[in-house]
Image 1 (cartoon, helix red, strand yellow):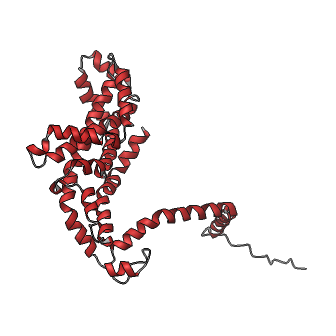
Image 2: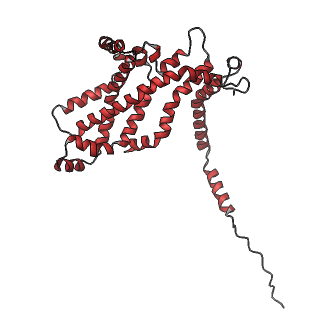
Image 3: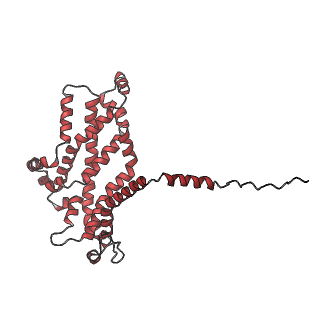
Length: 303
């Protein structure tokens, strides 16, 4: 008898690893229980509901007036597509945007700088009455805008900067935003300075460094992440302010972008396409600030 030398072929190895991928995919699908699917579906529905006004405004900004009246706000601007609303809004808001930049940038920088100095004095310097001043700063954070409108208008009427120079109203608004932003900036910086190494500052004092030199050489360089937080916060708050600007600005040459955007509504008829385009143009600087400095903002919040 001869031995049967026939052998069964062995299964081929899965060279590409497709079998492992399929097992992994099946494992993921197995973990998608009905409850998890319902959760994801609910979250997607919330996202769609949250973004639908933004989508509606964006589609409206690219429609002509006839297309806006004849189509649904959620319908894409296939018929009646135009960029004229963007050009009109940009031309109407151009000067007000310059006024807003001239107001917002120095006001944000000054309020952050003064808040940093005040927080340094409240955390790294011991002096009598420190707790009372801190309480006053905390109380100032919670004062609503509406509570100060009447005395604010009366105060600036007595000072009369608007009568001295045509741009005096913008200076009044700038000082108002700086004063109103110092308390919140102080609280933010104080929380940050409490985490700084006190031994480093104490060593500088023993070496004979003055309070000003310690702040300039040690505290200020370490404060860059918190400056990013306060500057972004203040820039957004001041740029989007409408109430203070409405009360303090009467000359249209001094209008900021929020007031000029409100003026786009008109008195007899409203061009919603132009108004929506203007809203996106007015929001663009704050969006760019968050995109460009978002990493520093997140770093400052986590420190």
